[in-house]
Image (tube, rainbow, N blue to C red; front, side):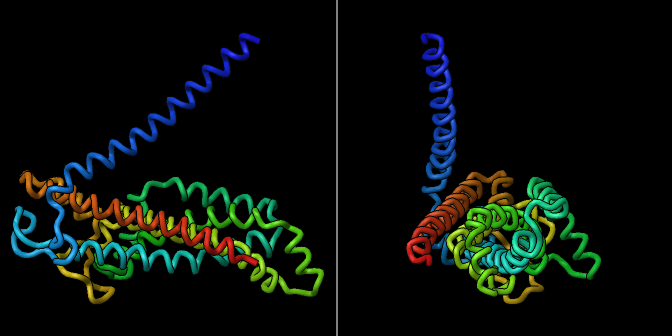
Length: 281
């Protein structure tokens, strides 16, 4: 009895220690960004594009990077969800879930899930060279789309498995086609689809490696898909490499803006998920 209580105490301590480390790391990162970014945050940072000498500590803001990040992540998320939903529906409703083919496809997406984002950036860059594209907003969207598709597919695949198989079987027994049954299932997982979409958007808006070679960088807000686009992660990366203290401070201010943006996305995902869950039929 004493041995069992001792083991329980040890594992309870280890769980508590792991929790403290994770939560402490979160507060340490957030605290550092806030402490170093607050002195440099201003209205100009979020309402103005960079003016002359911005990267040597003068006027301007990062509005171009904020808009560019929203363009890249938003475009990639829309394309990603359009591609991912048919794949997930096919794997779960048009073929048996546990066939060799379905499991092989899932394993492939698991592998793609773990590939570093710089590889997607390099692959997107190869595609751009092949089609004669230069670094642009379109290139960034292509690279980020490739990055988030495995995330969306594996997330939605696990979500759709939570729908009882009886619901699908009942639809078939009433004479529904596979597509009609799929619409019933998709209606049930609307909260999960929205959550996956917002989380993929958050992943895309915060990634730097995949857009480093594909989106380019510009001090202006892009007005077409063929113009280069700045993103917040790239702006932070370039500013932190500066030897000037004020520019590095601006980088932390941009990091604070990015953190706030990701936080809003997370809160929105939680809010809309609960709202759709209540209204689900």
